Amino acid sequence: MMREQAMAAWASRKEAFDRSRSWLQNSLLVDIHHHCPSIMDYYFHGPLVDVCSQLIGPNVKGVTAQLSFKLKGNTLPFGWHQDNGYGELDPYNSISCLTALDDTNESNGCLWVLPGSHARGQLVSLTSVEKAAGMAIPEPEVDLAAARPVPMLAGDVLLLHCHTLHRSAGNSSDRDRRLLFLRYADADAVEVYNGRQPRLGRLL
Image (cartoon, rainbow, N blue to C red; front, side, top):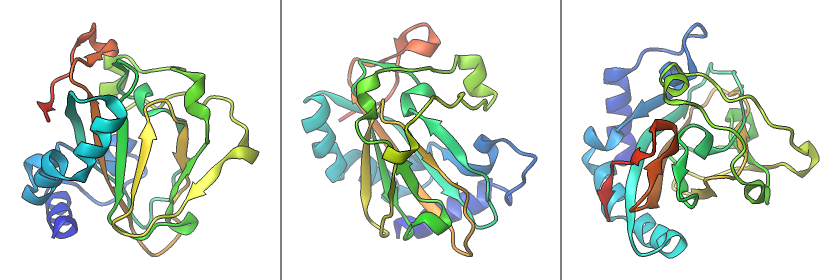
């Protein structure tokens, strides 16, 4: 049900992949929980709330819910980055939870991670203006030999610390690669890129 609702929301709000468009336009649909009751329930009442409460602390809030799709035909890679680079939050303990809506592997653009890279701390982040413009973060230097692909089956969940470096290659297959991206943060989290304004989100 969740995948069907997600696809209905995507189809009604997004257009076909277009190389002339930004990654924001081609790959993301933000605030998806406002359009899919099943995702809202999973986001606010599902098992990830308990998991992230154990990792972050007892007082958490949901701060991001979006679809991250790499549809067939989208052969563009997305470079190495930290999720906190695209929305720097303090305290630096937010967790990204990526639920696979499809089976993913290297052919259709699964994620690659750099184990232990969270120990490098915050590397670079976009300003609010750069973020709104859909700019990409300059890629940091990484040890490619240490990188690991993360194939997933539909329903699997990958948890990433906000400083974990990860990337995805292009989708060279005839299958879509669709992910539900949920982010949880400390209840007192602020947006560093936005003058340290409180990050809005539902307390869980």
